[in-house]
Image (cartoon, rainbow, N blue to C red):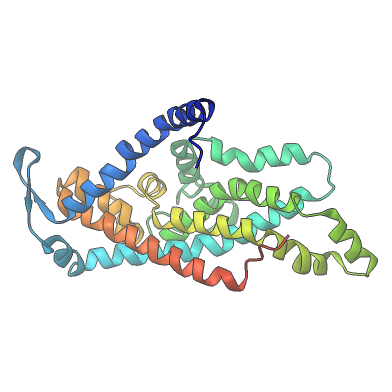
Length: 294
């Protein structure tokens, strides 16, 4: 075997130098903290930031706490509310934005705008809209719905805001997948007399399924990790907080308010395992509906 030339060695050195900042950042900011979190989940928090190994005590306490199971259900329920409707609306918007309509660029910018706006500003505006006394929705319909303080409604309210915020980003991703579909397929289908609806189900949907699969994974992960939206929409003094508290909200409360970082780390590991389980199920199921053929 020939030894690599000096030019090849220099190229490899420069390549490693270019990716080194990313690799170092990944190690310092992601991988090392993750293993520290695993260790902390088996430890009890002591004074002055010290930790004492306690085995599975945090996990046993966590699984025996009704509040933890309620937070787990809230996270799953939030996924059920947001993912199917959000992905469907994003696909619908992507198809409409791909159609021959005037001002498509303007509409694309409008739909993507919620992703640019700060989450705090989004939450503030929607809190005004859903205000029980002087909110726009209750005023228009003459209703008296307690959107943010009713335990039976608060999660639906947060889901509406989450869907509205994510439609633009997901629609742009799906639009890029739709635009990569060969127009000759639609021309051939049109010559065979296929309607627009039939073309959507026989051409668009199968061809965009890989992008749809990626969007689905991203949206499920984001929904299971939801924190900031609920934190800003539902105050700690809100009587409906228990019905809206997600796993990440419970982690924040236990870690930064109660100071119980060992127990909070166990919640994080449980959330990671839950996301991993959902992702594995998705990868197994995608073999039946995702089409990777060109």
